[in-house]
Length: 310
Figure 1 (cartoon, rainbow, N blue to C red):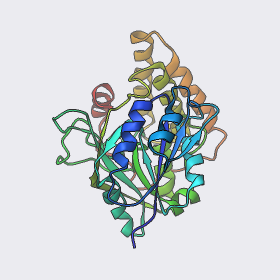
Figure 2 (figure 1 turned 135 degrees about the vertical axis):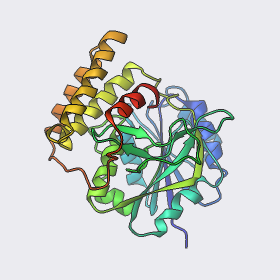
Figure 3 (figure 1 turned 30 degrees about the vertical axis):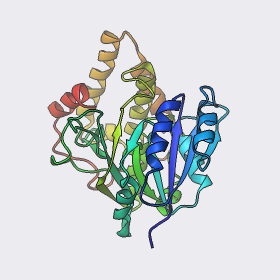
């Protein structure tokens, strides 16, 4: 008997994008229930439009923008499906997306599964196929700017925009850490799930086209603030600066901060990292689970990816 599936979507002032997303989800080959959070409080008419066109969707209109992680946690608590699927509001999935995404859960050791997202256009380049980590705990989208048939890097876990979790695993770890507003929460959850003994899998047949940054803006102050917070938080929670990779990590962080100061004339990358570091000080320090990072990603490769691929 196939597992029951809850699909969770968080949207913020992206009415046309989320309507397209829901239109594609309506064509899925397996039954599912959709839970959607309008983080903009119906400011652009998203709630009204969804209720009119997709009355089966269970929508929650937030009184304020609670961020990605908190909203996802709220939606997950409303459902009871055996599998919890997270989908970006700016992603148009293929009809067999959900069917293929849940197949790896036949293995009871698997607690999380990564789908494959493509960039818009006819070239069929990958946007992401889960997350891989380098020794400095820098996260990358696997296969980014490559073809689906290319060899992917080591899988940590799914990216929050095309992810599936076994509900038992999700609830045991209480979902996303609410300290994250957006960015980094999927890395943190994947690390915690691995520490708890769960394995990650990838589903190449679970595909969708992702517009990539359409709802937050590429390299925006919003991204620099929340991405910087996530870096500071993760570095402290997982003790990277006390590891043998501390010098390398410090160099990368310094280069990132200097780039913000010179190119954008902003100290946000620094202040956000400090904020994240302080926040992580209120939590227990965790170890990095075996097999979570790819030791082969060199400092040179790290800098190249930060500049061109992330």
